[in-house]
Image 1 (cartoon, rainbow, N blue to C red):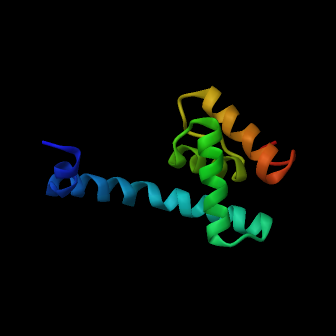
Image 2: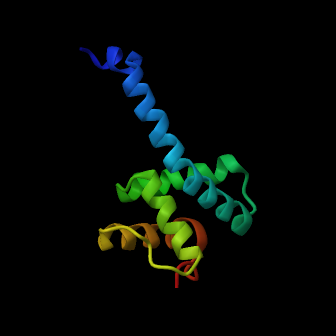
Length: 102
């Protein structure tokens, strides 16, 4: 089976939709936080999340999880402390300034 055929497989599509529904809320929360803090549009906030994800090599969902947890002053629920540190450092550097996540 080719990659193109996999996309048409109902079970693959169902799994992709389920994963999207699981990850969407935290991504939307992180976007909302960036929109409020920076006065950005939804598109600008999503672009910032994507940029952080690409610069840190951390999945977008995990980037959003770290940002939401940090903005809520709780420990991010990720098993890799290096990924958390990389996301926070990149967020401070490129998006929010040094006061974020401290």
